[in-house]
Amino acid sequence: MKIRYPAFLISLLLVAACQPTDEAPSVADDPLSTSMVGGVVALTGRVERADGEPMKGARVTAITEGRRVTVFSNADGAFALPELTARQLEVRADGMQPQRLDSHADGASIVMEPAIDRAALLPSSHWLSLLPDGPMRREFTLNCGSCHGIAHPTVTSAGEFRDEALWLAAMAMMRAVDVYSVIPPDFDDAQYAAWLAEHLTPAAAAAIALPQPPADDLLERLLITEYELPQGDSLPHDLVLGPDGRVWITAFFYDQVWGLDPASGDYRKIDIDDDPRINAQARALEFAEDGRLWVVNGETRSVIRLNIETGEYETFDVRMYAHSLDLDTSGNVWVNDYFAAEERIAKVDARTGDVTIIGVPRSGRPASEGIPLPYGLQVDGNDRLYSTQLAANTLVVHDTRTGEARLLAMPAENSGPRRPGLAPDGSLWIPEFNTGHITRFSPETEGFDRVYLGMPTIGAYDIEVDQRSGIVWTTGSLDSSLFRYDPSSGRIDRIPLPTEPAYTRHLAIDPQTGDVWSAYSSLPPATPRVVRVQMEVAGGGRD
Image (cartoon, rainbow, N blue to C red; front, top):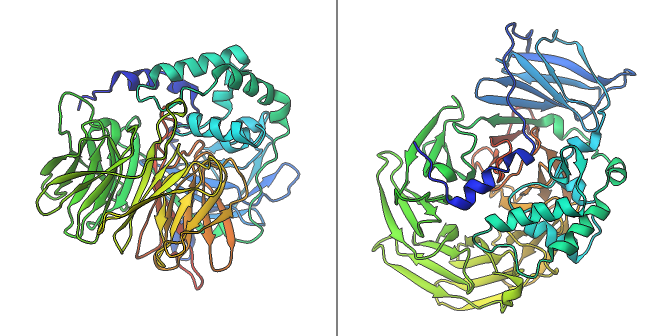
């Protein structure tokens, strides 16, 4: 299928070389050794430093065709990879030079050497932490980290740290491709260029502290599977778990949805191109109770209703570039207007197909500060609609039954609220992209309670709540990680992902197993993959 990129996206893709990549290695001729662990074919070993000290929390990845399976080493440095069919291993540990092994004797040690430039291997969160906390860093994170990371390949140019002139050149390039005017007019390029050159220096990078693995065995109880995509430049924007057992993904640049079979790794592709003249830009998606899939096509200002069995679909003109989508208790579809100067939402009547445009309370954001950027949208069991506004730092609460609507300010200044998730108790959890907090909103009291995840620059993008346990999961999109928060105990866990960068967007949680799914979806594309995190539960087996 031929891709029809909009002109601004062609320009943006041309700068993909400035983003870090993690190419899949070639498969060696000789398979790795295997043994039996618990009756399952496995590969075992130990990760250690040159002095023989064990390395806890090292990521050991078996690479096979179409997928990568990762486990973490324990306090003794030991690891065991289940269901091994790979012929190559990749081993990563913070501060150490990554290794790729074409052969490995079962049970043998893998010795890791210190990286020559350890900061070059760290995610964007650590580089952003070098910037002084305050309004400038929040504004920079919002405007320059919303689609991609800001790590070593961005901070440097031709191997040297950027000076003011090179930072200005990078900003000029971004403004040239910003056809939707996401970067606000009052963003002072010259001021930020000088500020970045002052703080992002070799000396500052050398002092970055390495992340530490948790003290207990949480990581050793995880199994992470990463699936390669049919096309790496697809921008896998959102995903959802389907009633057919597949994971359905929007292939933004291919005008398609892809259904991944987790067992085989095979994909089913369905075209949803409702205007052959342009790239429709498939974004959000959600299944209705009848099994049909609703999908936002942003650039064609439409949503479609797709029969995944036949591939047939209907198109509904919502007259706005929608960002997010959700269904109410009657099956009606709601979307929000991403690039509007005046905030709006739209309803598609699932029975009649009628589309209604509804104005919601305005943030009053001055034109000099840019558009409000309505972002995440959720509809709860009482048909209350919530829409965050990323740049305006507000939350819209709209009663879809009565039409009553309110606009609430987030509790922290310029916090960058992105894609919220609903908890079993009806509360709304909101990720703050610019602060490292997640915030619980109570619809009864209209109060906010904030929880700090431990680092202000992680780029919390999306939240999904496990409806069985109430566990809150959020993406650290600038940290190449996921975070797990247990409200009942207050425990917070950081789960590093095997790929760097892993710019995660949407999360989905399997209601039966608790498995957590996401996709790496950076623009420009870095290393797009679909990822599944499985957690072992007490008594053996994985949740």
